[in-house]
Amino acid sequence: MMIDAHHHLWKYKPEEYGWMDHTMSVLKRDYLPANLEPELQKARVKGTVVVQTNQSIEETRWLLGQAVANPFIKGVVGWVDLCSPKLGQELKEFAVHPKLVGVRHVIHDEADDNFMLQPEFKKGIAQLEAGGFCALYASSTKGIRT
Image 1: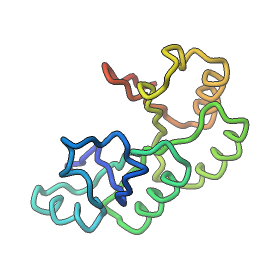
Image 2: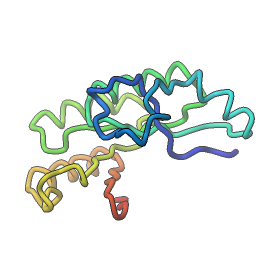
Image 3: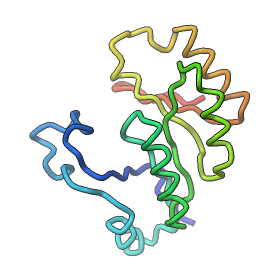
């Protein structure tokens, strides 16, 4: 079975996608499952993994809803605040969703070059591991998977 292992979905709102500059006009519209499914069929792709674009719990919930409503979405890489004292509660909420396959944090958007070395972040990573979740870190120079 051929799987598209990384794509994005969004309802475009300029205030939520500030990283899209004037050179990215093709991206400044909604990208929803109904737009993607015909392309998947043409390419004979049987399933996908959708990856978060905004670092928000609301988007993670929305993507999980899209995965439930669209069987071709086989997995979701969402986002949780790895530094939050509420992380344990959020992980419990998401643990019931079998399509949540991991979480991602876009570290190159962080002002602190040592963001990943913060004690709170390390504690959050440990909680992910203990809960059986995978963490993906997006960087402008390389991706690291743990």
